[in-house]
Image 1 (cartoon, helix red, strand yellow):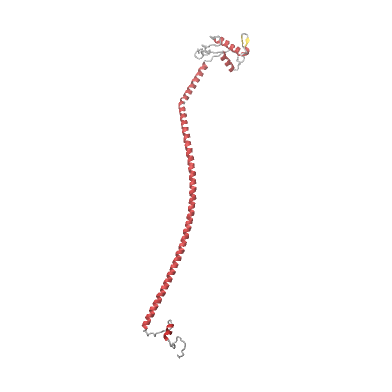
Image 2 (image 1 turned 90 degrees about the vertical axis):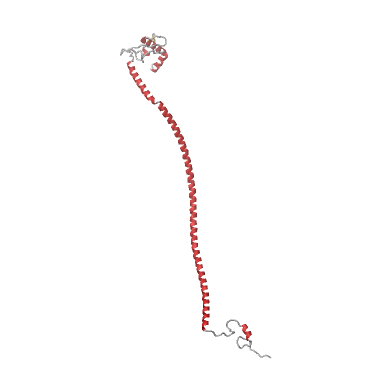
Length: 264
């Protein structure tokens, strides 16, 4: 019969030491006894460990700083880009507004150009009409000038005719024949008698004047007409046969003259 043993534990009193050692893990239990080292070796290991830890910490800090810088740069770039994008959007909106205004101005300009073209067409029509009228006026002026050039000599001719008429009037004044002792024309139908009858009818008056001229101027033909030749001027004593010659009077002429004198 085996001896009663205490329950297994981690202490050195355990009889089954290898089994207990296998169960124990970690640095809390040292299986082998360390060799005593020199102090320089310890310092070197401590320095190496410190350097490793420092490098690790530096890497961590470097990474943190890089991340911070990257984040700060990203935020700065984002803010800058946002500002620039806002500026660009505002500029694009203004540009769009300007483009709309330019489109409206272009439409108005096209309308103005259309109106100007219509007015130019009307002006061209009016100019063509005025040119046609001017050509017509020029042709009329040419005809008027030609007519005036044809009648330029008429003024001198009229003056010559006036001078001739004036000279003829002067000559006619010298060649007037004065017949005296003859009753007034208004008293002729009531006072003059022909063949014992009163001359009231136009035929009687015509016969009366015919006999009167026959008796005074001695006509050559006693039928319906008479001729007067060679009348002497009583005042001047000159022959005027060139002024009064071959005066042919008929009954119709005498009646016409009597009507003009309001005798009948």
